[in-house]
Amino acid sequence: MTNLPSLEVCLSPALLHLYDTKDTVVVIIDVFRATSTIAAALDNGARCVVPVASVEECISLKDKLDNCITAGERDGKVAPGLQYGNSPLEYPTSFIQHKTLALTTTNGTKLLHMVSDADSIITGSFLNMDAVCAYLIRQNKKVLLACSAWKDRVNIEDSLFAGAVAEKIKEHFTMECDSARMARELYLQSQQYPSILEFVKDSNHYRRLSGFGLQKDLQYCTTPNLHPVVPIYNGKELVVAS
Amino acid sequence: MTNLPSLEVCLSPALLHLYDTKDTVVVIIDVFRATSTIAAALDNGARCVVPVASVEECISLKDKLDNCITAGERDGKVAPGLQYGNSPLEYPTSFIQHKTLALTTTNGTKLLHMVSDADSIITGSFLNMDAVCAYLIRQNKKVLLACSAWKDRVNIEDSLFAGAVAEKIKEHFTMECDSARMARELYLQSQQYPSILEFVKDSNHYRRLSGFGLQKDLQYCTTPNLHPVVPIYNGKELVVAS
Picture 1: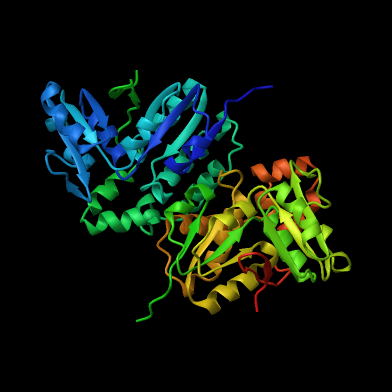
Picture 2 (picture 1 turned 90 degrees about the vertical axis):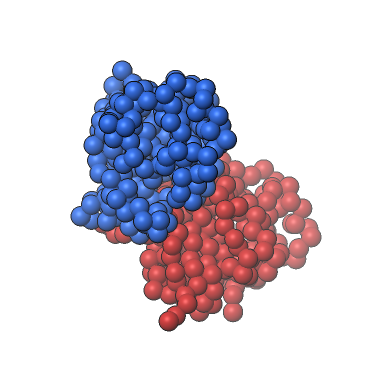
């Protein structure tokens, strides 16, 4: 009889304290757009991504780190004092290769810093979905899919991604978590739509970001497997997992 | 142009602080089993239900209130010092009519006491689903469907009920809440199953309560509209809304 490791889903950072992250591979999910941008930047050759909580800390890294660019938005605009935004489209190979990206975001980086005792922390998005799935199966350890949400409010796109991963790798894990089942049912429901983008159009984040004119970003971030890397956190930086 | 009131869904008491409950009709949902039992007791003629947070407080009401019976479970058994359990099946008309039911439960009564500034507080379950829907449409006010969850963990059955209500009355409300959409998609997904009971069998609460031998309760609590009353909280007691 096989003893499969468990997989759970946490729908909001405000619920994270209910989960035991010890000896667990935690997947940080912020589809719109932190973890999408991290996958794109690393796949396009960034040396690493340094996730920071505040704009101030991000600015301070500009001079401390070699070949470092600073990025972050607040309310859909590049935050004052930073150089670039949160869009994965801003980081093609021609620009980001060999550079360090210091990145601050509203939700994703906050959650990453909340997890302290995990076995490891990786980041997931549709852009690197299959790579994340393969990694989790290979590790064969307890998994927590942790949604960044929007200021603690549960959101569709992160829950949907958690559900897609849970559904794809369900044979390899024990799933007794109701949130995981709900996320999987959401994913199954989304299969009736022509695309992930169409499914997430009726969501708070879509309305908010498309109001900023970011339709291209939203389309890009919902396209599966354009950037097949697994970003892993070494306590300071996100780098490509070997 | 019609200005419809908003409807939102809160999936866990740990997320309640994110919602503005002022001028709002809050529906407390604890399908397994507090709000199912409340609907059954009131429909079967109980004078009122007094929801209390602790076993001690519940015991103390026995002598304070006229014709009062005390009820509550901890870990699937009648709590020491109380007389009856949390099962709606324990409260037929022949027993509960004209009595006051003092009830303490793990999740539902806790959430009810957390809401302080609402326009009104009612309770919902599959047993009184259509009555709740009709009431919400009639009130034509802002609505929050508040799931009791399980010790703050999001659960399937409360989310599913929230989704059923949201789906049934969606034409009468503005729904820009991602949790409401997720709950609705869960309900739509459940329509592919032969019954609500079958859909919720893969859930933590089903596994836990069926382990206590409570299959009959679970079946009863997932049967729609057996008790078409709207229990409303007057600050002290739940009574049938006029």
